[in-house]
Image (cartoon, rainbow, N blue to C red; front, side):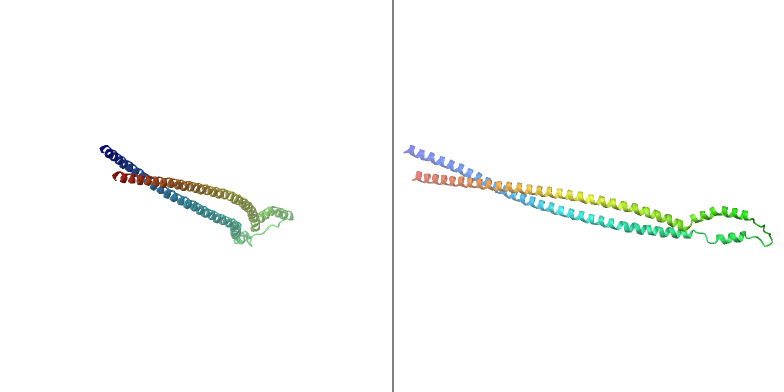
Length: 251
């Protein structure tokens, strides 16, 4: 009888120890399950942040494209207004040059010189021979031509020629500037296309990677959750069986 009681007592102690071990294991499983749920929430937050970052990069690319288009419009407007401004400036320079040229022409000096050179009525003038008159006309011709070459009309012609040459140079510069601007626009368009395509590819790859990781995490969490539920059910059945054995031993 004592041996039987001792055996029952020993089985009761072993059942209590097994029950305590099962309780500890159940607590560990529950903590691990809570940890997995926290990790899943963190990964969901990371996924949302990645999506927001992709949207922010897209908005930034759109803003940069808009700024570049505005800058190109301003450059084209400046190029279209450049010939008009240059022409106005050169016309103003021609008018100013003509005014200065006309203003520099002497007006009062000739009358004074003629009055100073007029002979006195008391002085007798020597007759001038025809040959000497011809010689004096020949000597006076270069002086007249020189004055003619320095006339305002000659300066106007020179200014007009210079202005035409500068206008042609300006037209060449405008053509080169337009060609350069067109090349810059084409390069910018190609760069923008490459950047946009690369940005889209990167965002798609990132989103796909996050989605794949998220799906794998969800599947893994479901598998672990199912395993834990099975383990909990098994532990509960073991505890129930141990409780029944304990009751039978006490009876």
